[in-house]
Amino acid sequence: MRSTRVLVTGAGGFIGHHLVTYLKARGYWVRGVDLKYPEFSATDADEFEILDLRRWDNSLQATRGVEEVYGLAADMGGMGFISAHHAQILHNNTLINFHTLEAARINGVQRYLFTSSACIYPEYKQTDTNVTPLKEEDAYPAQPQEAYGWEKLITEQLCQHYRREYGLETRIVRFHNIFGPLGTWEGGREKAPAALCRKIAIAKLTGNNEIEIWGDGEQTRSFCYIDDCLTGIFKLMRSDYHEPLNLGQDRLISINELADMIADIAQVKIVKKHVPGPQGVRGRNSDNTRLRQVLNWVPEISLEEGLARTYAWIEDQVRAKLNLGR
Ligand code: NAD
Image (cartoon, protein in one colour):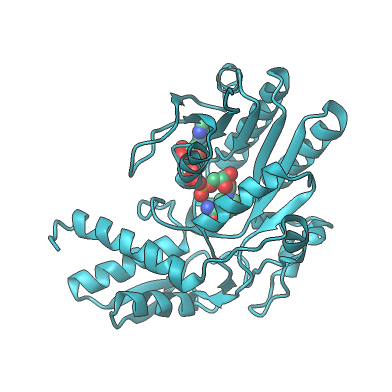
Protein backbone atom coordinates (compact mmCIF):
# COMPACT_ATOMS: atom_id res chain seq x y z
CA MET A 1 0.00 0.00 0.00
CA ARG A 2 1.28 3.47 -0.87
CA SER A 3 2.12 5.69 2.16
CA THR A 4 0.19 8.90 2.67
CA ARG A 5 2.29 11.79 1.38
CA VAL A 6 2.63 14.79 3.67
CA LEU A 7 4.40 18.13 3.60
CA VAL A 8 5.93 19.67 6.73
CA THR A 9 6.76 23.35 6.26
CA GLY A 10 9.32 24.81 8.64
CA ALA A 11 10.96 21.36 8.69
CA GLY A 12 14.35 22.96 9.31
CA GLY A 13 13.03 24.50 12.54
CA PHE A 14 12.52 23.17 16.04
CA ILE A 15 9.03 21.60 16.00
CA GLY A 16 9.03 20.85 12.25
CA HIS A 17 12.27 18.87 12.47
CA HIS A 18 10.92 16.74 15.32
CA LEU A 19 7.60 16.32 13.50
CA VAL A 20 9.30 14.93 10.39
CA THR A 21 10.94 12.21 12.52
CA TYR A 22 7.63 11.49 14.27
CA LEU A 23 5.71 11.12 10.99
CA LYS A 24 8.40 8.98 9.37
CA ALA A 25 8.22 6.61 12.34
CA ARG A 26 4.48 6.26 11.64
CA GLY A 27 4.94 5.25 8.01
CA TYR A 28 4.28 8.53 6.20
CA TRP A 29 6.15 9.70 3.13
CA VAL A 30 7.40 13.15 4.15
CA ARG A 31 8.59 16.20 2.24
CA GLY A 32 10.23 18.88 4.35
CA VAL A 33 10.47 22.48 3.21
CA ASP A 34 12.32 25.36 4.81
CA LEU A 35 14.70 28.23 4.09
CA LYS A 36 17.40 26.16 5.81
CA TYR A 37 18.30 22.60 6.78
CA PRO A 38 17.88 21.55 10.41
CA GLU A 39 20.78 22.92 12.43
CA PHE A 40 21.52 20.19 14.95
CA SER A 41 20.86 16.81 13.30
CA ALA A 42 20.06 15.47 9.81
CA THR A 43 16.45 15.39 8.63
CA ASP A 44 14.57 12.09 8.28
CA ALA A 45 12.45 13.49 5.44
CA ASP A 46 12.20 11.51 2.19
CA GLU A 47 12.67 14.77 0.34
CA PHE A 48 13.84 18.13 1.69
CA GLU A 49 13.55 21.25 -0.44
CA ILE A 50 15.00 24.65 0.29
CA LEU A 51 12.14 26.98 -0.66
CA ASP A 52 10.92 30.41 0.36
CA LEU A 53 7.19 30.14 1.09
CA ARG A 54 6.74 33.90 0.87
CA ARG A 55 6.99 33.26 -2.87
CA TRP A 56 3.89 31.99 -4.66
CA ASP A 57 5.81 29.78 -7.12
CA ASN A 58 7.71 28.19 -4.22
CA SER A 59 4.47 27.52 -2.32
CA LEU A 60 3.00 25.78 -5.37
CA GLN A 61 6.12 23.65 -5.68
CA ALA A 62 6.11 22.77 -1.97
CA THR A 63 2.49 21.58 -1.92
CA ARG A 64 2.53 19.50 -5.12
CA GLY A 65 1.57 15.82 -4.88
CA VAL A 66 0.81 15.68 -1.14
CA GLU A 67 -2.42 14.81 0.66
CA GLU A 68 -1.71 16.61 3.92
CA VAL A 69 0.18 19.71 5.01
CA TYR A 70 1.52 20.54 8.46
CA GLY A 71 2.18 24.28 8.28
CA LEU A 72 4.94 25.18 10.73
CA ALA A 73 6.97 27.69 8.75
CA ALA A 74 7.09 31.09 10.41
CA ASP A 75 9.44 33.97 10.96
CA MET A 76 9.50 33.81 14.74
CA GLY A 77 11.51 33.68 17.93
CA GLY A 78 11.27 34.40 21.64
CA MET A 79 9.87 37.54 23.24
CA GLY A 80 13.02 39.56 22.42
CA PHE A 81 12.62 38.82 18.71
CA ILE A 82 8.86 39.02 18.27
CA SER A 83 8.53 42.28 20.19
CA ALA A 84 11.17 44.01 18.04
CA HIS A 85 10.41 42.97 14.43
CA HIS A 86 6.73 43.67 13.93
CA ALA A 87 6.84 44.78 10.28
CA GLN A 88 9.02 41.87 9.19
CA ILE A 89 6.96 39.29 11.09
CA LEU A 90 3.55 40.51 9.90
CA HIS A 91 4.77 40.78 6.32
CA ASN A 92 6.62 37.46 6.12
CA ASN A 93 4.16 35.29 8.04
CA THR A 94 1.16 36.65 6.14
CA LEU A 95 2.81 35.82 2.83
CA ILE A 96 3.92 32.36 4.01
CA ASN A 97 0.49 31.33 5.30
CA PHE A 98 -1.73 32.91 2.65
CA HIS A 99 0.40 31.47 -0.15
CA THR A 100 0.80 28.01 1.36
CA LEU A 101 -2.90 27.61 2.11
CA GLU A 102 -4.00 28.75 -1.35
CA ALA A 103 -1.35 26.63 -3.07
CA ALA A 104 -2.52 23.63 -1.01
CA ARG A 105 -6.09 24.24 -2.20
CA ILE A 106 -5.05 24.49 -5.84
CA ASN A 107 -2.96 21.32 -5.54
CA GLY A 108 -5.90 19.38 -4.06
CA VAL A 109 -4.50 18.90 -0.53
CA GLN A 110 -7.10 17.26 1.73
CA ARG A 111 -5.97 18.23 5.23
CA TYR A 112 -4.07 21.25 6.45
CA LEU A 113 -2.89 21.94 9.98
CA PHE A 114 -2.05 25.52 10.90
CA THR A 115 0.14 26.23 13.93
CA SER A 116 -1.31 29.19 15.77
CA SER A 117 -0.23 30.48 19.16
CA ALA A 118 -1.34 31.53 22.63
CA CYS A 119 -0.22 34.99 21.45
CA ILE A 120 -3.65 35.36 19.80
CA TYR A 121 -5.34 35.72 23.22
CA PRO A 122 -6.37 39.23 24.28
CA GLU A 123 -3.84 41.12 26.35
CA TYR A 124 -6.64 42.33 28.65
CA LYS A 125 -7.08 38.76 29.92
CA GLN A 126 -3.40 38.38 30.81
CA THR A 127 -2.62 41.28 33.10
CA ASP A 128 -2.10 39.32 36.32
CA THR A 129 0.56 36.77 37.30
CA ASN A 130 -2.19 34.62 38.83
CA VAL A 131 -4.01 34.56 35.50
CA THR A 132 -7.20 32.61 34.76
CA PRO A 133 -6.32 29.89 32.23
CA LEU A 134 -7.31 30.84 28.69
CA LYS A 135 -10.20 29.04 27.03
CA GLU A 136 -10.45 28.87 23.25
CA GLU A 137 -13.51 31.18 23.19
CA ASP A 138 -11.56 33.88 25.08
CA ALA A 139 -9.94 34.88 21.77
CA TYR A 140 -12.71 37.39 21.04
CA PRO A 141 -13.18 40.36 21.35
CA ALA A 142 -9.69 40.32 19.90
CA GLN A 143 -6.70 42.18 21.25
CA PRO A 144 -3.81 39.85 20.42
CA GLN A 145 -0.09 40.40 20.67
CA GLU A 146 1.04 43.01 18.16
CA ALA A 147 1.89 41.76 14.64
CA TYR A 148 2.78 38.12 15.46
CA GLY A 149 -0.52 37.46 17.28
CA TRP A 150 -2.63 39.41 14.76
CA GLU A 151 -1.21 37.41 11.86
CA LYS A 152 -1.94 34.13 13.64
CA LEU A 153 -5.51 35.20 14.34
CA ILE A 154 -6.24 36.27 10.77
CA THR A 155 -4.76 33.03 9.40
CA GLU A 156 -7.00 31.08 11.82
CA GLN A 157 -9.91 32.92 10.19
CA LEU A 158 -8.62 32.17 6.71
CA CYS A 159 -8.34 28.45 7.53
CA GLN A 160 -11.92 28.36 8.77
CA HIS A 161 -13.22 30.10 5.66
CA TYR A 162 -11.26 27.74 3.40
CA ARG A 163 -12.85 24.78 5.15
CA ARG A 164 -16.39 26.12 4.90
CA GLU A 165 -16.18 27.45 1.36
CA TYR A 166 -13.68 25.12 -0.34
CA GLY A 167 -13.98 21.94 1.72
CA LEU A 168 -10.28 21.88 2.62
CA GLU A 169 -10.17 20.15 6.03
CA THR A 170 -8.26 22.63 8.16
CA ARG A 171 -7.06 22.07 11.73
CA ILE A 172 -5.88 24.88 14.02
CA VAL A 173 -3.63 24.36 17.02
CA ARG A 174 -2.71 27.09 19.51
CA PHE A 175 0.64 26.23 21.08
CA HIS A 176 1.57 27.40 24.56
CA ASN A 177 5.40 27.61 24.87
CA ILE A 178 6.81 24.40 23.42
CA PHE A 179 10.36 23.52 24.45
CA GLY A 180 12.87 20.69 24.13
CA PRO A 181 16.21 19.61 22.67
CA LEU A 182 17.26 20.53 19.11
CA GLY A 183 15.75 24.02 19.36
CA THR A 184 17.44 27.39 18.97
CA TRP A 185 19.33 28.12 22.19
CA GLU A 186 21.36 31.25 21.29
CA GLY A 187 21.48 34.09 18.78
CA GLY A 188 18.40 36.15 19.72
CA ARG A 189 15.51 33.91 18.54
CA GLU A 190 15.67 31.47 21.47
CA LYS A 191 12.78 31.33 23.94
CA ALA A 192 12.83 31.54 27.73
CA PRO A 193 13.45 27.85 28.64
CA ALA A 194 16.35 27.53 26.17
CA ALA A 195 17.80 30.92 27.11
CA LEU A 196 17.70 30.04 30.82
CA CYS A 197 19.25 26.61 30.20
CA ARG A 198 22.07 28.30 28.27
CA LYS A 199 22.68 30.95 30.94
CA ILE A 200 22.68 28.36 33.71
CA ALA A 201 24.97 26.02 31.76
CA ILE A 202 27.41 28.89 31.23
CA ALA A 203 27.20 29.74 34.95
CA LYS A 204 27.95 26.13 35.83
CA LEU A 205 30.79 25.69 33.35
CA THR A 206 32.51 29.04 33.95
CA GLY A 207 31.86 29.49 37.68
CA ASN A 208 30.28 32.94 37.14
CA ASN A 209 26.96 32.32 38.88
CA GLU A 210 25.09 35.51 38.02
CA ILE A 211 22.35 35.08 35.40
CA GLU A 212 20.24 37.83 33.89
CA ILE A 213 16.43 37.65 33.94
CA TRP A 214 14.28 40.07 31.97
CA GLY A 215 12.01 42.11 34.24
CA ASP A 216 11.24 41.07 37.82
CA GLY A 217 10.90 37.42 36.81
CA GLU A 218 7.44 37.18 38.40
CA GLN A 219 5.73 36.94 34.97
CA THR A 220 4.09 33.52 34.63
CA ARG A 221 3.69 30.97 31.81
CA SER A 222 3.09 27.26 31.23
CA PHE A 223 5.59 25.14 29.26
CA CYS A 224 4.96 22.02 27.20
CA TYR A 225 7.57 19.44 26.24
CA ILE A 226 8.11 18.71 22.52
CA ASP A 227 7.08 15.02 22.67
CA ASP A 228 3.66 15.97 24.03
CA CYS A 229 3.38 18.66 21.35
CA LEU A 230 3.97 16.07 18.60
CA THR A 231 1.40 13.68 20.05
CA GLY A 232 -1.15 16.49 20.28
CA ILE A 233 -0.54 17.76 16.74
CA PHE A 234 -0.94 14.28 15.31
CA LYS A 235 -4.09 13.50 17.29
CA LEU A 236 -5.64 16.79 16.21
CA MET A 237 -4.80 16.23 12.54
CA ARG A 238 -6.46 12.80 12.68
CA SER A 239 -9.53 14.11 14.54
CA ASP A 240 -12.71 15.67 13.13
CA TYR A 241 -12.28 18.81 15.22
CA HIS A 242 -11.91 21.93 13.10
CA GLU A 243 -12.16 24.78 15.61
CA PRO A 244 -8.99 26.24 17.18
CA LEU A 245 -7.62 24.11 20.05
CA ASN A 246 -5.11 24.89 22.83
CA LEU A 247 -2.08 22.64 23.05
CA GLY A 248 0.05 23.20 26.12
CA GLN A 249 0.55 22.36 29.76
CA ASP A 250 -1.67 23.99 32.39
CA ARG A 251 0.91 24.21 35.17
CA LEU A 252 1.61 27.88 35.82
CA ILE A 253 5.15 28.83 36.83
CA SER A 254 7.03 32.14 37.11
CA ILE A 255 10.24 32.76 35.21
CA ASN A 256 12.08 33.00 38.55
CA GLU A 257 10.75 29.55 39.53
CA LEU A 258 11.68 28.18 36.12
CA ALA A 259 15.25 29.43 36.57
CA ASP A 260 15.44 27.82 40.04
CA MET A 261 14.12 24.52 38.67
CA ILE A 262 16.77 24.47 35.93
CA ALA A 263 19.50 25.40 38.43
CA ASP A 264 18.41 22.45 40.60
CA ILE A 265 18.64 20.14 37.56
CA ALA A 266 22.09 21.56 36.73
CA GLN A 267 23.07 21.29 40.40
CA VAL A 268 24.45 24.80 40.47
CA LYS A 269 23.73 27.78 42.72
CA ILE A 270 22.70 30.86 40.75
CA VAL A 271 22.31 34.54 41.57
CA LYS A 272 19.44 36.10 39.60
CA LYS A 273 20.07 39.62 38.32
CA HIS A 274 16.89 41.32 37.12
CA VAL A 275 17.48 43.59 34.14
CA PRO A 276 15.14 45.57 31.87
CA GLY A 277 13.89 43.50 28.93
CA PRO A 278 10.74 42.54 27.03
CA GLN A 279 8.45 40.33 29.12
CA GLY A 280 5.26 39.99 27.09
CA VAL A 281 2.02 39.60 29.00
CA ARG A 282 2.12 39.39 32.82
CA GLY A 283 0.62 35.91 33.04
CA ARG A 284 -0.56 33.21 30.63
CA ASN A 285 -1.88 29.70 31.11
CA SER A 286 -3.75 27.16 29.00
CA ASP A 287 -7.24 25.93 29.88
CA ASN A 288 -7.15 22.31 28.73
CA THR A 289 -10.84 21.47 29.21
CA ARG A 290 -11.54 21.41 25.49
CA LEU A 291 -8.30 19.61 24.66
CA ARG A 292 -9.25 16.82 27.09
CA GLN A 293 -12.78 16.60 25.63
CA VAL A 294 -11.75 16.61 21.99
CA LEU A 295 -8.63 14.44 22.01
CA ASN A 296 -9.33 12.47 25.19
CA TRP A 297 -5.76 13.29 26.10
CA VAL A 298 -3.65 16.04 27.70
CA PRO A 299 0.15 16.54 27.82
CA GLU A 300 1.76 13.99 30.11
CA ILE A 301 5.45 14.79 30.44
CA SER A 302 6.27 16.74 33.61
CA LEU A 303 8.09 20.04 33.45
CA GLU A 304 10.94 18.58 35.54
CA GLU A 305 11.38 15.67 33.12
CA GLY A 306 11.20 17.84 29.99
CA LEU A 307 13.63 20.39 31.43
CA ALA A 308 16.09 17.70 32.50
CA ARG A 309 16.25 16.39 28.92
CA THR A 310 16.47 19.90 27.46
CA TYR A 311 19.09 21.10 29.92
CA ALA A 312 21.32 18.08 29.27
CA TRP A 313 21.26 18.78 25.54
CA ILE A 314 21.93 22.52 25.94
CA GLU A 315 24.74 21.94 28.43
CA ASP A 316 26.41 19.73 25.79
CA GLN A 317 25.99 22.49 23.18
CA VAL A 318 27.48 25.11 25.52
CA ARG A 319 30.33 22.80 26.50
CA ALA A 320 31.19 22.22 22.84
CA LYS A 321 31.02 25.93 22.09
CA LEU A 322 33.26 26.81 25.03
CA ASN A 323 35.60 24.04 23.87
CA LEU A 324 35.37 22.20 27.17
CA GLY A 325 35.70 18.43 27.28
CA ARG A 326 33.60 16.30 29.58
P1 NAD B 1 11.24 27.72 14.37
O1 NAD B 1 11.64 29.15 14.19
O2 NAD B 1 12.24 26.81 15.00
O3 NAD B 1 10.79 27.08 12.98
C1 NAD B 1 10.16 27.81 11.97
C2 NAD B 1 10.88 27.51 10.66
O4 NAD B 1 10.22 28.23 9.60
C3 NAD B 1 12.34 27.95 10.65
O5 NAD B 1 13.19 26.85 10.41
C4 NAD B 1 12.41 28.96 9.53
O6 NAD B 1 13.61 28.93 8.77
C5 NAD B 1 11.21 28.56 8.67
N1 NAD B 1 10.82 29.66 7.80
C6 NAD B 1 10.77 30.99 8.10
N2 NAD B 1 10.45 31.71 7.02
C7 NAD B 1 10.29 30.82 6.00
C8 NAD B 1 9.96 30.96 4.62
N3 NAD B 1 9.76 32.18 4.08
N4 NAD B 1 9.87 29.85 3.86
C9 NAD B 1 10.11 28.61 4.39
N5 NAD B 1 10.44 28.42 5.69
C10 NAD B 1 10.52 29.51 6.48
O7 NAD B 1 9.88 27.74 15.20
P2 NAD B 1 9.09 26.55 15.95
O8 NAD B 1 9.23 26.79 17.40
O9 NAD B 1 9.47 25.25 15.37
O10 NAD B 1 7.59 26.93 15.56
C11 NAD B 1 6.84 26.24 14.56
C12 NAD B 1 5.45 26.86 14.45
O11 NAD B 1 4.80 26.84 15.72
C13 NAD B 1 5.44 28.32 14.00
O12 NAD B 1 4.30 28.55 13.22
C14 NAD B 1 5.31 29.08 15.30
O13 NAD B 1 4.75 30.36 15.12
C15 NAD B 1 4.38 28.15 16.08
N6 NAD B 1 4.48 28.32 17.54
C16 NAD B 1 5.56 27.89 18.22
C17 NAD B 1 5.61 28.05 19.60
C18 NAD B 1 6.77 27.56 20.41
O14 NAD B 1 6.72 27.67 21.63
N7 NAD B 1 7.79 26.98 19.81
C19 NAD B 1 4.56 28.70 20.26
C20 NAD B 1 3.49 29.15 19.53
C21 NAD B 1 3.44 28.94 18.16
